[in-house]
Image (cartoon, rainbow, N blue to C red; front, top):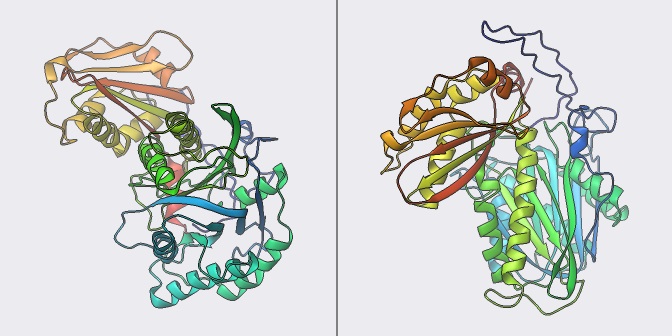
Length: 453
């Protein structure tokens, strides 16, 4: 997605049943002076970063403004275990194919680095695009002292255009020269993978497994073309815990299914979706194996951490004014609950009603009905709005019967930045899933209508 410097201001849109809805200004250049005040609270000022990594982000010339960071590099001081999940889009981008092949050949062992560019996706670029991706990896491998491929490649931006590979290959050594391990270094790395994002998505924390203390860091990018299947646009995590590669893949797959695979901004699956994780063991301790000591603890930590990162992507959805949690309860299976939640999350009619503060619960019920899930019991189905301020839920449908909805109260709830929609299917199965989405505003159309212009 091409970063744009333009700032667009929109006039109020008036609805007959509510107060004016104003789409906020969207800032495209990532920097302290341009992050919207409402989003600044999501940008950390310090962090708990894992041992044994050096990172950095620079401007190498992909983005045409001459200053926005567009090349990120992450290196591990020692060979690390690695795992990744990738898009299921048939038109997989070159970096997806290159990274998947490298990880398969190495069985997730001995990975030394990750390099990512923003501003050009290197997707649907043929043999030349594959050669460019391989060249990026070779340049990094040379700098970290590896003779065999050991670098994960990521790209994001406009589809169908070749990378300015000469600029990238010249930029990689420059990025390597400025690598660091402090907060500023991690923040510059997070900024370098941004496109239409309005703020960098970076998070870190310390955690304990047994008697050992470890740290995990993660970053993500994405604001549009987000409705993933096995990943989101770009996501990366790193820990200094020691983890066997097959165990790391098992943990990541479980975590992604409940985080990056449980978000939707616009229902579009990118060609470049990738979520990767490195574990270099620099903090010491016995290697964590599936079913062994520390496995369940680490799985819970990575899952919760990935969920928090995924939420940041939704909060920065293109044109979004609301963060919406969709909870589907009493399904026969987790998969059924998730399918219903996903269908509601990507319904344009639901999303536009949320933007307009219209308590049109019929659209929620309609999406539930065409989700393709068997066993839904209409006369036992319930739909509610759950306010995030702790006040009483607003019941819209109870056991298949419509409530006499207080429209004024509904409008108050829908005016909040955060909202939960609760749907109970009445199957008696007791299974539940949570999905995260946002609304559709006029700005989403404007952003994507002139994306390349």
